[in-house]
Length: 126
Image (cartoon, rainbow, N blue to C red; front, side, top):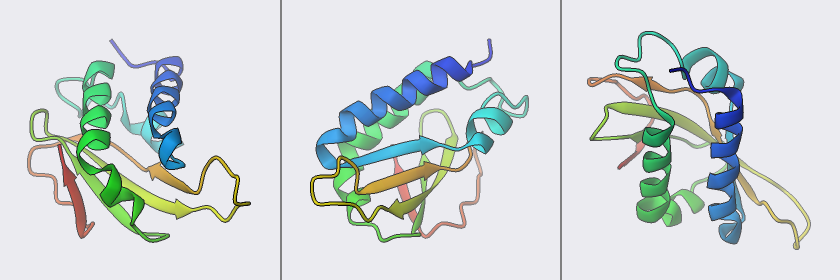
C-alpha cells in the first residue's frame, strides 16, 4: 500500500518534534515524497514503519554529527537492514538568537538499492 502525503507530513512532524531541542529539522522534498517514495523500483515497497525506524535510529546514533555539518554539505543515510538509502543536504538558517530552527536537513530522495553508490562523502549507517 503506497505511503500517502498525509503519512509523510505526519512522519516529518514527528521527526521534527524530536529534533526541536537541537534546533534542527528535516524537510521532505517533493522529489522524495511524490516522485520516489512510492516508486515501483523500490522492491519491496518502502513502508512508513521502515522510515520511522530509520529516522529514530539516525537521531539516536548520529544527531550530534549531523549538527556539526556545514551549510550545503550533503550526506547519505544508509539502512543496513532494509537497503534503503536517503541522500540529504544541509541548509543552515540565519535567524534571530531565539529562533526555533537553525539547521534544515533537506531529504532529497529515497531508494531501496543494495549496492547504491552514494556520491556523498558523509554517510550515516543505521
